[in-house]
Length: 324
Image 1 (cartoon, rainbow, N blue to C red):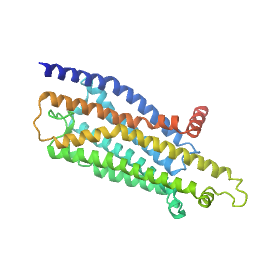
Image 2 (cartoon, one colour):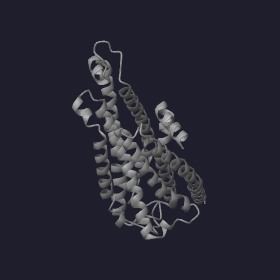
Image 3 (spheres, rainbow, N blue to C red):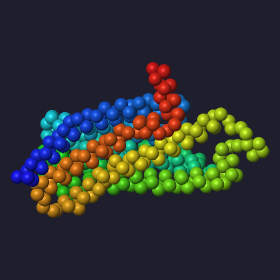
């Protein structure tokens, strides 16, 4: 009797969270990412390769939130067509997983770009270019689409013994999809972000400790060290801003997505264990919560850029509003 009451309570909480918290994240995330796209496409920012990564990542986040959260909101009122329609289930899962993979990997490439730009080697700094950013983005889109093409076969509607009605139809399918998502889409990009983020910090420390290298990177006159060309000064200010907001974004991405990685790995490891109805309910409840946290991570970039990036992004945002 107690187990039944706990299960009913958790089911009720899950329904309410899907109904109302999903709506909040949807409005919060889509508004922020749309503003991101408008600001990052401004002439003062769009020529920067890191900004280009942020821009395309924001577009991918909009797609991910729209495809993913719409069904979560509708499921709160038992109106989710992807739960019963196989085609919509496969299409929604494919688009959502591919767009999320693109968004995460582009932030990882942005971290690599900041490392290249902070290098004391001129040859490495040359690799930080808009052309390379565009080529990297195309490669990520193609690879992400190829990575999740198995979803078009694996996912099906009307799944009963699964966290969602639209889910992998066999144990093998669930194993492949869950591990691909946890390791390739989430964990690997986060590791790259952390590794190259630390290497960027190391490069910055080396630059500040070496005056001759610093002078070369900042284009300061070796004789009087007084003047920096205004355009170069502005570009370096933007680079510092991008580096700062990137590090803050990595921290939030890690906090909000690692729980789902742990949940996916736990589900995979306990897949063949017999569980009570209460344990299944608890697992589904945790799945719903950590899933919404990942959508929250997708909706946060605009607010991170606005609150933690100094005046560069805020000034561009104010210019946008004045223009409109």
